[in-house]
Length: 269
Length: 264
Image (tube, chains in turn brown, purple):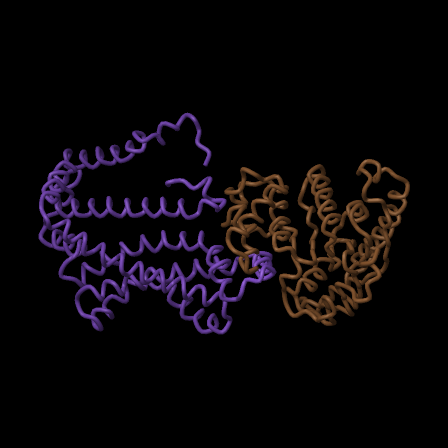
């Protein structure tokens, strides 16, 4: 793949450390994290809960300041930008806007004519299967529908980078699989650069090119797995294949190792 | 709200009148059986005649309009200033450091205590009443707006920032919409305060208005007319509250509360 050998990475995380003020001493959430993500790559970060995975994503999003540098297209970022589309764990839809207006929200700053924007919104409402729900408010939607709107809202602006913070964490198992397939389809179609945070190892293996395993707090990248699976075969075949399960088990053991280490560390305190 | 079937009749339109009828009957009985001196507690029938008499004249209507316009001006100015102050306090640490002690110090002060001061400054009349209403409405609006803006989830703020919303736009696009349910809750409290302060201020600091009218009837021993005037205020205040609830429902259709909001 040409994109993976591109000399300038799309996203470069260089020596990022982050501490929060704690009760007695500052709590270190991230320690010297280095990750390079090539254009078109789908990278997942997995790790025990509370390890600072989401913090890392918020730093890349530009919402939190941290020590170290984050570069996008070789330029240091200062704050949020429309080049990086974010899907939050809690959907973060504006509850006072209808489905259509939520999707239109991000398009307003793009300099498009209003009928142009309406066309994009209508197309995306069709893509996420919410025709007939355009004028509903988020409170009237199920979790899965809300997450589809959140993804559509982010895709509407056509960002080069997608930052996903446990995007399917709040969904039931069946809806989650449907949404994963949807995301995979979108990624295969658009080849956007994706950085996804998840605690679901199967999800990470199913979707990513590369998985970074993060240690318990302070979060560091302790393991890395390249995933070379054929994404074009149906889910049942892929998930039950030996190749899939082999890599899934490797990642799972690596994460479990970190989770156990975290528990021992907590018990010692 | 859960209602048991046995008492569901109480919530029908006719059922809702039952408690009022019961109170009226007890009131009437108290006079008829001489439990209370009827010259101090006129019977409902006499009050009804007084209401009928008042409604045919201009006196009650003119004074009510005067009071309502004073209350409305004070409420409008107080709410707008309150929303602005609450927003500023929530978004600026420096502003909050200066304003918080003043808000905290005056929040529980009965605003009617300031009426003598206003009389000294502004004399007898509209300005004094409007000032009293303004102050009474200001604080619930400040506190509620502040609360509503401060409780904006950070993902909503971050989400808006990620879509390129400029800092000025955040106020209109994120903070105020998020605070709207709290602002409406504050408005309902402020509406009640506006009637209280307008009427009590008119009693001591006005030559007209429904407060003055009630006070005068009381002074002159025309208790049936005094009750009649009070009844008119009750009806108007009730209707104003209902109108506000309907407006709230229209504006907050998106909010979780709208499915279970009741006209209670």
